Image 1 (cartoon, helix red, strand yellow):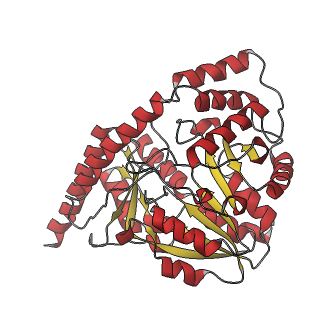
Image 2 (cartoon, helix red, strand yellow):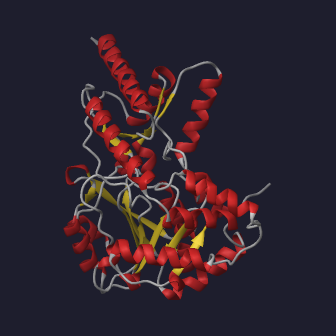
Image 3 (cartoon, helix red, strand yellow):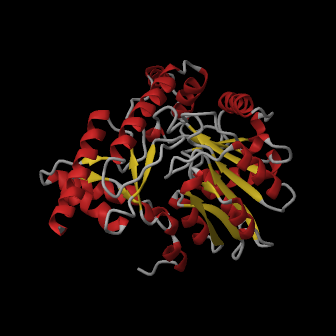
Length: 392
């Protein structure tokens, strides 16, 4: 079978590949601690599950509106307006199955071959994958560890060109856990305001932060009409398997996104939308407890990583990832990640899987129990010290 040439340009997510390898090792009897997959290890809140069950019992099992049910879109618009300090209506909201369609559909609608797309590197690998798939040109801008994994603004400015069609921002960020500081976000808004460019603001981790609340680019003058805001329910409400996300976008993009949605998915599952409505409008105690527990794990796990020879790990400002600098560990980050899995039984991700500027780092998801995280750090330290002993 001859595949279309464009399939040679599409990438994947290494987290799922590592998960498969880890499961194979477990099937052969090896103990593996899973720190590779980026999903909360908490249950979906009980009232959300009950809303989903009730929706099934009440017959919400048929096609719904392509753009999403009006009551959910109204709730999303109200939530986004309140949390970002802006005013948007439900007509700008598109409900989709997961967050990725709000990456892919706007790119399909906007990008032509040769257009340039600026994106953070290391960054979520689907950004670069989709840009390349569409024949546009990915322009990676490095995130700087010394700046809390924010951009060097001079480097960012130097990457802008007459061909720049889209800029992708992600804060809080995967894989680094970095949060773009307010002053940097303001500077980015000033750079982009008068350019013919669309911004994709991936804010899927907007509720998972440990310091000051992250600032959205949409809050700055002139940016709302240029920005596609991506958010959803997977991370905040531990609803990864429910597959429901949304985009808030300039009105000219709504119809193209709806057309792509109807051609690909018809609609988002009706009963999941009713569950999402309960998540957004119901009690938020489970979210608060989850974030507090992530903070506890972050503090303990990063401290333990910093005790490992050759490792350095700054405290991330958001999300649930520790992005450890392992350049002093004596081997490349891919080899180290592979050997930690096969020899130490710790599944993590090579930072290079998130782009070339991620080389020399490992990503650990601390969406696991504190006991497992500390055991993982013990195993890693034992492996690294064992290597040093063999070399001496």
